[in-house]
Picture 1 (tube, rainbow, N blue to C red):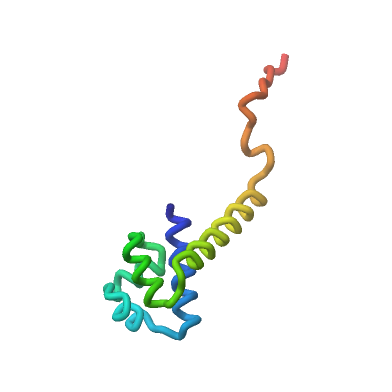
Picture 2: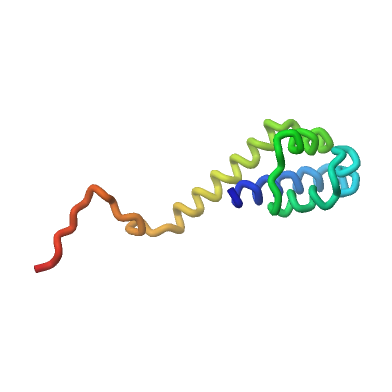
Length: 101
Protein backbone atom coordinates (compact mmCIF):
# COMPACT_ATOMS: atom_id res chain seq x y z
CA UNK A 1 0.00 0.00 0.00
CA UNK A 2 2.91 2.35 0.69
CA UNK A 3 4.03 2.05 -2.93
CA UNK A 4 0.58 3.05 -4.19
CA UNK A 5 0.39 6.04 -1.83
CA UNK A 6 3.82 7.23 -2.89
CA UNK A 7 3.09 6.86 -6.59
CA UNK A 8 -0.30 8.55 -6.26
CA UNK A 9 1.38 11.46 -4.49
CA UNK A 10 4.01 11.65 -7.23
CA UNK A 11 1.34 11.79 -9.96
CA UNK A 12 -0.70 14.43 -8.12
CA UNK A 13 2.39 16.57 -7.50
CA UNK A 14 3.44 16.25 -11.15
CA UNK A 15 -0.03 17.28 -12.31
CA UNK A 16 -0.03 20.26 -9.94
CA UNK A 17 3.42 21.42 -11.10
CA UNK A 18 2.49 20.99 -14.77
CA UNK A 19 -0.47 23.30 -14.21
CA UNK A 20 1.72 25.79 -12.39
CA UNK A 21 -0.34 25.62 -9.20
CA UNK A 22 0.93 25.96 -5.65
CA UNK A 23 -0.18 23.75 -2.80
CA UNK A 24 -2.01 26.76 -1.40
CA UNK A 25 -4.00 27.22 -4.61
CA UNK A 26 -4.97 23.56 -4.79
CA UNK A 27 -5.85 23.64 -1.10
CA UNK A 28 -8.21 26.57 -1.61
CA UNK A 29 -9.84 25.06 -4.71
CA UNK A 30 -10.22 21.57 -3.24
CA UNK A 31 -11.17 22.88 0.23
CA UNK A 32 -8.63 20.62 1.86
CA UNK A 33 -5.95 21.69 4.31
CA UNK A 34 -2.58 22.56 2.86
CA UNK A 35 -0.80 20.21 5.25
CA UNK A 36 -3.00 17.26 4.35
CA UNK A 37 -2.42 17.76 0.61
CA UNK A 38 1.30 18.01 1.28
CA UNK A 39 1.22 14.70 3.19
CA UNK A 40 -0.70 13.04 0.35
CA UNK A 41 1.83 14.28 -2.20
CA UNK A 42 4.66 12.84 -0.06
CA UNK A 43 2.86 9.49 0.22
CA UNK A 44 2.40 9.81 3.97
CA UNK A 45 -1.42 9.90 3.99
CA UNK A 46 -4.06 8.08 2.00
CA UNK A 47 -6.63 10.04 0.05
CA UNK A 48 -10.26 8.97 0.35
CA UNK A 49 -12.21 8.71 -2.87
CA UNK A 50 -13.99 11.98 -2.05
CA UNK A 51 -10.73 13.78 -1.35
CA UNK A 52 -9.13 12.38 -4.48
CA UNK A 53 -12.12 13.59 -6.51
CA UNK A 54 -11.72 17.09 -4.98
CA UNK A 55 -8.00 17.15 -5.75
CA UNK A 56 -8.56 15.99 -9.33
CA UNK A 57 -11.23 18.67 -9.74
CA UNK A 58 -8.85 21.34 -8.47
CA UNK A 59 -6.17 20.06 -10.85
CA UNK A 60 -8.64 19.81 -13.74
CA UNK A 61 -7.45 16.25 -14.18
CA UNK A 62 -9.92 13.42 -14.80
CA UNK A 63 -9.72 10.85 -12.02
CA UNK A 64 -9.45 8.07 -14.61
CA UNK A 65 -6.30 9.66 -16.08
CA UNK A 66 -4.69 10.08 -12.68
CA UNK A 67 -5.43 6.47 -11.76
CA UNK A 68 -4.15 5.29 -15.15
CA UNK A 69 -0.86 7.13 -14.56
CA UNK A 70 -0.56 5.59 -11.11
CA UNK A 71 -1.33 2.16 -12.54
CA UNK A 72 1.37 2.60 -15.19
CA UNK A 73 3.85 3.68 -12.50
CA UNK A 74 2.98 0.61 -10.39
CA UNK A 75 3.54 -1.62 -13.44
CA UNK A 76 6.97 -0.07 -13.99
CA UNK A 77 7.91 -0.63 -10.33
CA UNK A 78 6.75 -4.25 -10.54
CA UNK A 79 8.77 -4.82 -13.70
CA UNK A 80 11.87 -3.28 -12.13
CA UNK A 81 11.42 -5.47 -9.05
CA UNK A 82 11.02 -8.59 -11.19
CA UNK A 83 14.26 -7.78 -13.03
CA UNK A 84 16.12 -7.20 -9.78
CA UNK A 85 14.93 -10.45 -8.20
CA UNK A 86 17.16 -13.46 -8.93
CA UNK A 87 15.33 -16.31 -10.64
CA UNK A 88 16.13 -18.80 -7.87
CA UNK A 89 15.03 -16.45 -5.11
CA UNK A 90 11.59 -18.06 -5.03
CA UNK A 91 11.86 -21.84 -4.69
CA UNK A 92 9.11 -23.74 -6.45
CA UNK A 93 6.95 -25.65 -3.95
CA UNK A 94 6.29 -28.47 -6.44
CA UNK A 95 9.99 -29.42 -6.59
CA UNK A 96 11.25 -32.02 -4.18
CA UNK A 97 14.95 -31.87 -3.47
CA UNK A 98 16.47 -35.01 -2.02
CA UNK A 99 19.25 -34.57 0.49
CA UNK A 100 22.73 -35.47 -0.71
CA UNK A 101 23.84 -38.92 0.36
